[in-house]
Image (cartoon, rainbow, N blue to C red; front, side, top):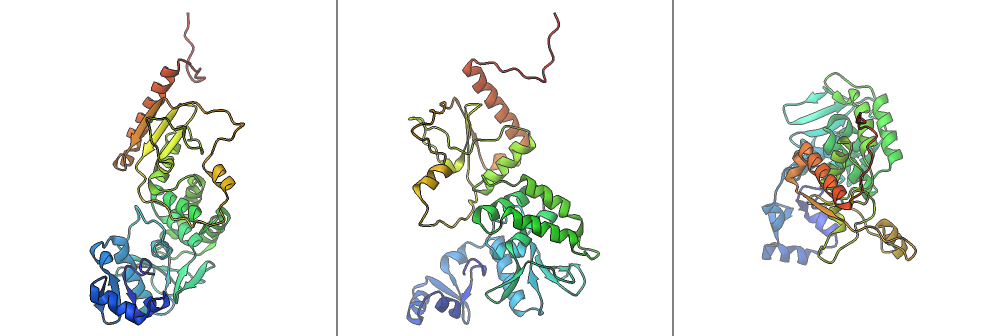
Length: 335
């Protein structure tokens, strides 16, 4: 509740979450919670860590509660309410969809998207009207840069908030929706379809999603879904490694902004073995890694540099194996 509302909540919200009045007053007296204004509070830690997403949510909550009727949160604003990662997205303006009005950016900092009819994919949560996760992802994929859109799409798939069928249906609805002048959404369904084609289910963080996209665009081999075999001198985290068995290479990266996922208590050990690629008794022992490559979060801003580094690492591992592979694209030498 605190995260969705931008770090603030009311006394009624606290009661709904199970806090009785004596506990609320005790937290206020001891400084655990701070009073923002009469009847509105915020945790002390939240007040000291305010980012663009939190400020966006605070403005959005006030506009939806006190603004004109018929406002529907969409695009980045709806993704923020669904707690999806907003890395790389512009949070300067609020994105709202309505049936009437002038489309485009308003002086109040609201980007109005006019749709008549509004179309499917609208829901109500906590008395707030917003589009569904699938529609929010489709709208962002149609109007935002490629890397943030792919990361957001993979986060929605990872969390189970949308399925590929839901996203395809939402993109088709965007293509059929009439767009007004000043609204770029009408020219973006093809771009959204491209994002859906690039998005996979193997990423567990924004950093891993960006790295997968760099591999795809550089035409490099795809990593194995199984974790790398561990050596005694290396302690690897499966959540921050990629294993290339054919190249005998392990790529370690900085797992920034992990995706959220609900863990179920009835998750069986067999399902865990399949998810993490555990080796069975009858499976062959995988080859040990020969080369290791480290990629930091700042390195991801230079895709060409990462591609060259990976190619060099793959080539070094190939030389160490002593096995030469034939490149069919290489010209034959004439005697």
